[in-house]
Amino acid sequence: QVQLVESGGGLVQAGGSLRLSCVASRSIFRFNGMGWYRQAPGKQRELVATISSGGSTNYADSVKGRFTISRDNAKNTVFLQMNSLNAEDTGVYYCNADDYNTYHVPRNYWGQGTQVTVSS
Image (cartoon, rainbow, N blue to C red; front, side, top):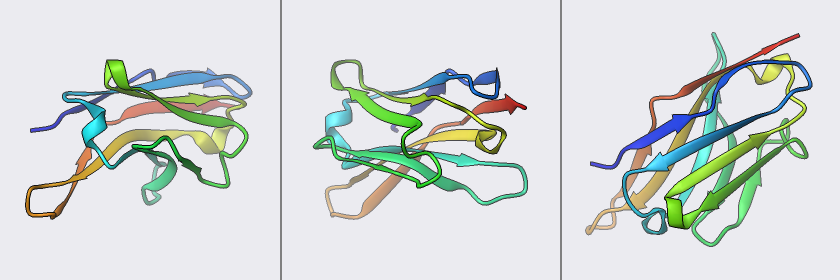
């Protein structure tokens, strides 16, 4: 069973920065892609950023220019560097990964989430 463990969340003032980490229990080379999602209170979970196995990245419009997703294959870790944080960035941030099983059925994995709170 694949496990994804997030860390790095916390309380930060508006304008500050945080760096989230997501460590996978196996080589991240085997995932099609990985990403970060977030869920604010009373709202649906939304995509923040993704990175493919080839290194291509994609960002939500609301975080472009402020957040950067990256990966360290040797450490089986994906990062999310978050700068210029504002109150709208508050929420639980979840790490996600996807792959296919031997029958080419897609599989999705989620971490337990890490809380990010931005005070204005």
